[in-house]
Length: 195
Length: 408
Image (tube, rainbow over all chains, first blue to last red; front, side, top):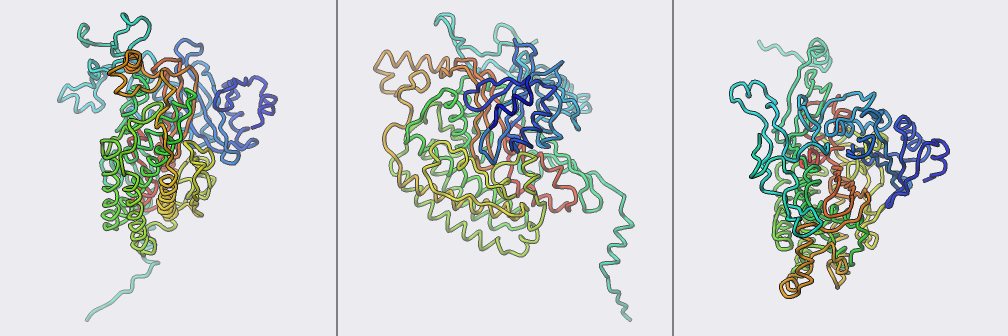
């Protein structure tokens, strides 16, 4: 791909020297223009993947990673777009396939896509209150109301966190004595029962 | 006296014109034989014609990506079985290659060749099921019996190789769980002869079958542009006339060494998708025969990757260094350097992609799974409206999706 042409046209774009493919950090206000430019001028015609990211300690905390594929030149390009106030402009008008990927990124991370035609959850149910792939969400889950209110009214059922005492067990590394393998998710265990 | 009235097409059209405007909402699934799993289609119907289709997914969502962030790389291998559970071997291989690329590992030739065998057998297995149930969805029961007989033979071979018929978990980061069993390749060769006969049989049963043609030809065509816009991959993309196959265009695991053709469709309708899969089975057999003929000897795992692949069991029991190495690997996981990688493999359903971000150590920071079935289903709202309700089973069968990979 023509890296120079892209960085000249969009001077705020930064080449990150990716180890497996050309990688750019892009300004999210320019994201849609860049994706369109890459599709029309550099024949990146297929959206390989779009996913959300929770960078935890970075600011901004959330971002979107886009992988584009050129079926003509047989190459990939990766775009890192950090969120602004947890929002990113949609690219679903450029690649209609991004529609569902963006819904998933919203569902899992709470990233809002400005201009998205159908901003609903996709994997979790509509009334689900959390965004489970965020780093502060426990692996076991959090107790939430049962999705079907009429069933819950009769049975009093809720959606409970998963039992986590069975693992997976991973050592935290460091000194061997302090690194006994334990379940990474300690939201509840033998000592601390689930609330 | 008997009076007769000739019914003309005009009458029917006029009558259906009167009925137009009354739309109806129909829920198809989540448990419907044609939805191949737990997919719900929320349909709006005008008579027999679908005017709107809204797929509802997530019934099989298990949070695989979240789970992956909480375990070591090798602990996640069994979860990859449950992505496209009709081709677990291909998922194992794709995942292992992705992590190995991140670690910068080069696999020995024998390991690569064994993985190619696994991938192609998984492709045949997945397509046999896909073709069988597709034919069943369109009303041809017998084909399913023929393809399933072959699939059983494949499963017996998988069992011999991996110890499991279904959830194989065959690969490890940096190698495999075990080498090939004695005489196994000859049995694969025998299977290859049989499966070609079955495919010819299916060919005779379906390809010129009037009913099958009626139900698939010209139904839900996906143009080249539409397929690319929605990011379709694999057989569905190729049926639309885009000759793109990662095995040829971005070769991995030594695919560049083998000679095979990429079947490409012209119209991208349900029939083309069927034809492409049929030919892919034949091409897979061609690849299998070449690999079997040229199967290299030597190591079947990366012997120099001491911080990634487990040492041989005999050495663990007798040598101190290997014992420590084994203990560290099991408790802390294979040590993968920091970085990010996106790797896609040509799986039976399309490109299965893994985007892995590592901060170093044995647990990934983020593991994103890009399932091709997710993409194949996202195109439904664009291609289903305008078709008859009965065509939906053909369309779903022709897209050959699997919910395990869609919902993850």
